[in-house]
Image (cartoon, rainbow, N blue to C red; front, side):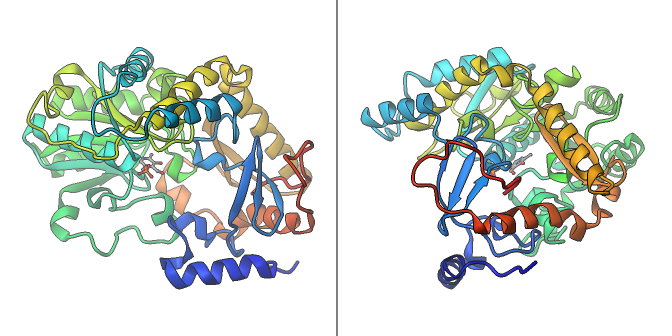
Length: 412
Ligand code: PLP
């Protein structure tokens, strides 16, 4: 099968590459791991995306999480338009932000107070700052292959785009910053103990994706999260669950609810905004009271939490609660998993699925429990599914209006 893209896509990407590094504004959009030219989206409705070449795709990416209710949900669109007509950004507090904060506090275990940010990166950076301020220590312990955004301290043995491109230690990160980041292996408490011993008395926080989405949705083995909790409590270390990917997804209260382990701080993003740029960090009252202006830890945002973002987020939350498929998130995830596995088996391909709830991925022919397994995955084989899904769609004509029946394409 040819990997040549239609002329329109190439000319779009050529133009983009001339004015933007790599032609995209976030690395995974370049499709480097997929092995096709990237696609540029013209519009999206429900479960479908349409690109500038008129091809229609079933969207299994879902904006990497936020588009959980599909694109252009009428109630969310209406809430956003309604909020926009009342002013975009005030640089002042908004009366409605308390409602959203109250709902998050009511829903997420251990989250007694919450502060909104725009991106997940800001949320994780801020949570670490609070932990350092509270403990008076410098070092953070993270897990190889875990991704917590693009702040310098996290770009050490990072997953996600960094893993895709094989840049575990990023240029541009100072050695002093990297020295403050200790690394352990997910699902391996002995490696945690070794790292804690090597940095004895210096560890402010353990930061963990409780289900490691950025390594292929690797689930915690029984006792692992509990083991982190026990060590943090014993050594006065702040336990931070980065639930930017798992929040409201693996369960309505996130992985903390699903696995019954309560962190000291939690970070949220992606799904929380229902497609609008919104994220948050929150946790124990005594820690969150350190954040300015209640306490001395700086944290500000000119463009943070506009009324429009909050309007979309509140409406998305209400509809997530009502949507039948989301009331049973794990059941929906399990159906998709079973279908993908059956399809692979019928094609004679050996895959194993990893994940929890609506976070899942077909990743390898054997189970993945940590970074060693994830980095040994046959990436060329893994790329075949998205590559062929994208290429098969080339023959689809541009629908004249919103698609009424699903196109044949299986994945974008
Ligand atoms: N934490 C996790 C677990 C993520 O998956 C991501 C993004 O992929 C981030 C943090 C950073 O979020 P953002 O891209 O909104 O800065």
